[in-house]
Amino acid sequence: MAIMYIGSIAESDYPALREICNKREFPRDFAVFRLRIESRKRAYRARGFIAREIIVDVAGFKRRRRPRTGATYRDLDRYAARLVYRKQKRG
Image (cartoon, rainbow, N blue to C red):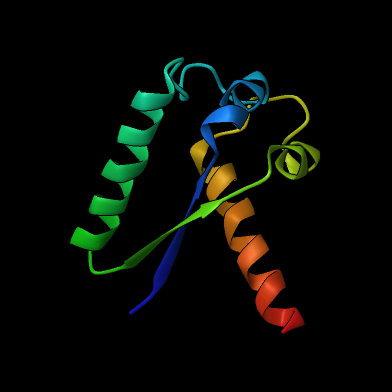
């Protein structure tokens, strides 16, 4: 079974995340953001994937984001997966 990594943020970091993300995609309210994360995990599981939530560091994500457009959930997920793979590679 394939693993899908879902990027997430601590509540205290959420305002900083919203500054660099697509405002239409990321809600103002952290509680709504959490509901979307849970919904995305359920959707992956329903399709037969293992869904793993990865809490990411906003500063690190900010360095990797697309320069002219707001970051998306897909960008956040890719960054989370990159962190996991990098950790596995080290060891």
